[in-house]
Amino acid sequence: MAQLRAVIWDVDGTIAETERDGHRVAFNRAFEALGVAWRWDEGLYGRLLEVSGGYERLLYDMAQRPLAPSSPAAREALARRVHARKNIEYVELVAAGGIGLREGVRRLMDECRAAGVLVAIATTTGRANVESLFAREFGGDWELGFAAVLCAEDAPVKKPDPSIYIEALRRLGISAAEAVAIEDSPNGLKAAHQAGIRTLVTPSAYFLGEAFPEAALQVPGLDARVRVGASEFERCDLALLRTLVQP
Ligand code: XBP
Ligand code: MG
Image 1 (cartoon, rainbow, N blue to C red):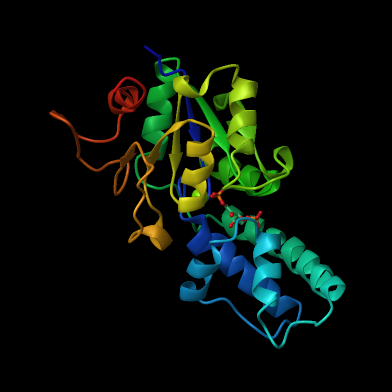
Image 2: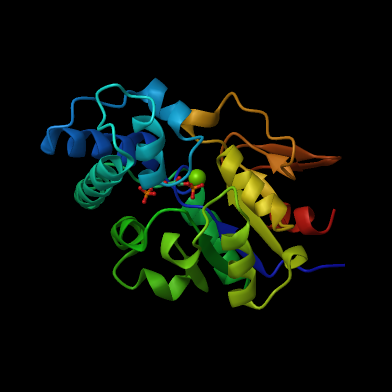
């Protein structure tokens, strides 16, 4: 039977509520700074999260906006400018410390490390965005605590495509059966599931009402009490994660 050797974490929505409190706010600041006529409210942003990747999300939204430039080349140029500015705004926002980790994240990562289970990252967002959040939350030497950190730059096709998880397994030198993924969204779950990785889903604010039929387990948060079969867990701890690879 497989042993748990690594826990691969998504970032946006899973480690912190960065979609609602970070990226969306930063997109709106970028729209304002660049004189773009529209804004993304929470409801619309939740629907736009169907599209992974901030640049791709901007193009998708513009395709249905009468106020957007009409030529594809002009839309792409605007999306590039807005996305670059959004990332600057995001890094500033995160550095100001307004976001914080979701409950149980630090505890569970530390528990994995103490037991020799590798902690890794597989995210659709860019490395600079991860760097800003992690330096703030885990300190300047944060990379020492992660066996692999895969970001947008490491996988040309974004979630729900499984390539980022497949690449993460390759870099960790383990099989899918030896890993558990932690995700918050339907696209993230699809990516991990298609890579063959058993996945714990802790839905973020935008996905609270979603069904996640492919999840190995779904919990409201990592500090929530959980029942798996006949076993009861006070919270999502390492013992619980081990049951996901050894059902
Ligand atoms: C995250 C994303 C990203 C962020 C914004 O998905 O889809 O696009 O919304 O980041 P996941 P960028 O949590 O499944 O990895 O603007 O850098 O794309
Ligand atoms: Mg996510």
